[in-house]
Image (tube, rainbow, N blue to C red; front, side):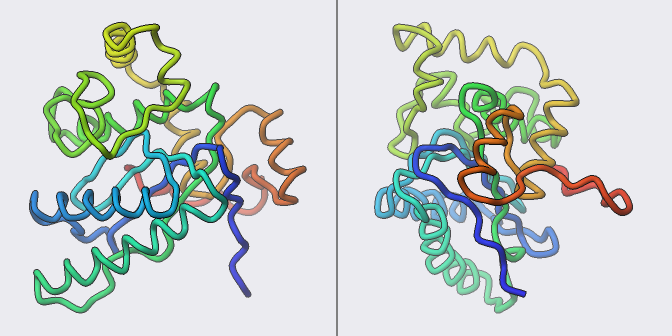
Amino acid sequence: MPRQPRPCPAGIPQHIIQRGNNRHVCFASNEDMAAYVNWLHEASVKFGVLIHAWVLMTNHVHLLVTPVKESAISRMMQYLGRHYVPYFNYTYQRSETLWEGRFKSCLVQADAYLLACHRYIELNPVRAGMVKDPADYIWSSYRANALGLETKLRTPHPVYESLGDSKKKRLSNYRALFEGELDDKCITDIREAVNCGLVLGTDRFKDEVEKIHGQKVRLQKRGPKPKTPFQG
């Protein structure tokens, strides 16, 4: 059975996860992560994808992006695969599959969930016990979004820009978001949406997406309860 095409409307943010096959390592050094970031930037510019937040973990990647054109995200990820996979295989003298099938993704209602996704993504190293402060992990967007570190990879979303009328206020208000933890329901909603290819948003937003694209974007309540998805 052919795979159902994923809706990828221009202008609507998406949360993306790309995982190492069988949860194996896909970044073994800082050089690997730097190479991936370089090709990610090239691909985002080439195909028209704005990148708002990211984190590179040892065996998976999270991205929060907005495509400028339809199908831009798939083209960006294909470009990454064509460049990063041969680099990784050559560097480590391997030939196995690097990624776990297609990347996972979900549409994100910006005004309701965009900043929650920012926090979820940038707190990944904290949840994994790698650091206590997200600022201590260099392979994420936290230092750019919270501390003002300049990077060509990042394009702030209008919701982020609305945090204040000056850079200083935006940075301060963004850091304040991290003073409290994400509640369990929000974490569950984010994981369920991206792992199952659903939509992260209000019921009204989901209704609009279903009407436009003719696809169900809610988890169907039938059959046995699925296994707990990857926790990332």
